[in-house]
Amino acid sequence: MDRDIEGYLLSVTDWTEDVAKKIAKEDGVNLSPSHWEIIYLVRNFYLEFNISPTVHMLVRMIQNRHGKGKGNSRYLFRLFPKGPAKQATKIAGLPKPSNCL
Image 1: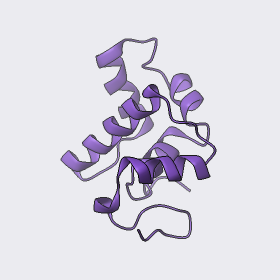
Image 2: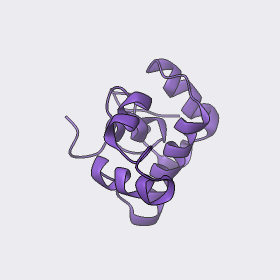
Image 3: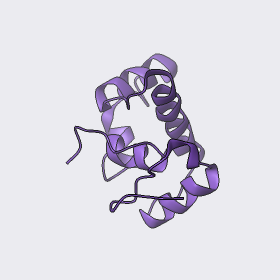
């Protein structure tokens, strides 16, 4: 499993749940069912559209599925404190979003 200097997988096809657990542990994230829900949402979006969703898009998708209680950026930042776009994407085995510094 090859990764870049920041720990992002170089190949999306190298991703497994075990790889996600390893990356999450390195980032200090203890994965819960709520994390997995977001990870798979981000991953499936990427596999369908070949781009990672922005935080705004992610909030809208969650809001449509689960209501405003989960569909807000505060909820996402509680799960992924280094930023949902950056950290969830990394754990999901996707390339670093181009809009992340």
